[in-house]
Image (cartoon, rainbow, N blue to C red; front, side, top):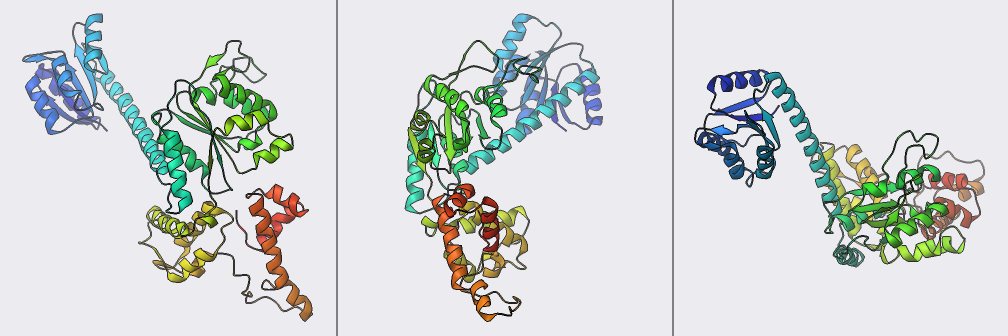
Length: 461
């Protein structure tokens, strides 16, 4: 419930209102003059102020003009017995949130306060999630040269200012390197950080639905279009639209996206009039767009337009000691989340982390540490707690003996053939930047077969 300050010189109404609202669960403080009200406000900043316009030693507008510069969040309701347009304008200019006309019913006041409380809670949640997004955008951890250069490039492009459309950004890198985090950093470090950041995965939505999601539609544009709907382009206007997996975008949508980037104009489905936009498009992909252009799956003109400001995110295996830095960060993060004691990584665990090649990059590391924090019996995480793939040179204990010793040597996890197969899978996945379908084509096997082999060798993306 809210904390209230009621300022009114009608003592009987003041007493009744305070008693009624306290029974409703609110914390109420009262004052009969402007001076008392200012003193009470300074002593304990309330959530809501219910303020009479005419006071013995001044007016409600005087109170608002003194309080509003110091507290922009407090909700102020000005009450008057003689409402007029001029007074309403003056009250809004001074900083009042609403104007009520006497007599004010107590039940009406209770309902109004309930709505204000809900609105303040919603605003608080929005601020909380916004703060989390901002914090995430600053957590591009790593001391490696690759990460330092990436942060410098983000800072330079975030400083770019322009009227209307900003030049697009193309983020490339393997699966799991943190391309979404880079996109958020591009937004929240720019001067448009207060504007919306809207994201969509182009591979997760079928092309016909994706067009409606992006551009919106008018009522009757298609069979199920029963009402007008705003698209994500409009929702992101003034801010950033993040297109993840842009390489999967349908060719028809690619042409429309190119027009948006070129002249900042678009048209809702079923609409006649075009609309103007002022946003930045950030696209990300783990695919080689040049290869897709050569294969006729991606428009060359869109590719060249998207890569005006390219950002390449290095895979984790090329970032040296960043593995240990990130592991420590995730360890602390998950220990707090799951209410575990302060966790630490043993020397053997650190050595195991350094030795692993991390085909799934930061996402794989994050999952490994989360699992270890949950399952480790004590406060120290050992190498066995990490559940990393067993060393290829280390035979698995407890495997049933095969009748043919030669076959056993061929199929055992520690055999040369087993090591060669695992290395071939890792190389193919690395060359395909984590794209399982592309790696399967390169190896000449089906996607399901590759998935089976990956599970056999405990390869995680």
